[in-house]
Length: 297
Image (cartoon, rainbow, N blue to C red; front, side, top):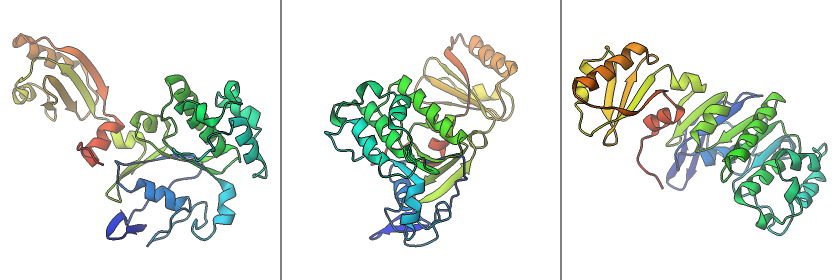
């Protein structure tokens, strides 16, 4: 797929596939092209090149056939500010052939107690949950979720995650865009990372993170990490970033031998490591390695 805005190439030959009945996360930094990609799949934009098919249909020309099968949750939902959630879902019910019961849906998303409250008086997290309910009320085969847990407290976030898992269990395909890497890692069957309009990595979360182990600790700044690496098994890397924070990476899981070698090295130099943690490589680590750490507008 190719998409241009004037002289700017927003999507540069991007190729990706989201399988039916799975949660596919499309991740990327700001300006990577993911919003343009999603909006093209939803039928809001036309690609300048390439082929786009959603549920076997072209969203640019088969919108009338495609829209009843697709649910869309946007960060800015466009819900009228003065309309209560119960009335809004009731209106949506009349627009679908086989909708879910809005009262049941309000209970599922935890909004029964505020069903009569105007949208503008709901908290940000409650507005997000109402937008999610609106996206799935028509029993879609495919649902697009854009930052679904933005503004939610931990309880609401976990309830939303449970709902996404229930959608997948029911055979619904989910396209997820989020900047919350833990959310993507927890929910996704497949992840596509895009940058500068191209796919730079794809696979399951486990495939992307691999088996690399990490050991982190804090100590006085300026330790000789080259000397530390020399005392550790071959294939081990160590760095200090930021100051006083040390990261040791190995190509396998951290074992007792590595831990003993690190603490022995510290003991020989009268260094007391604190906040020592054994971790696995995370999706956020992979994301930053592929797309960089610089801020983007």
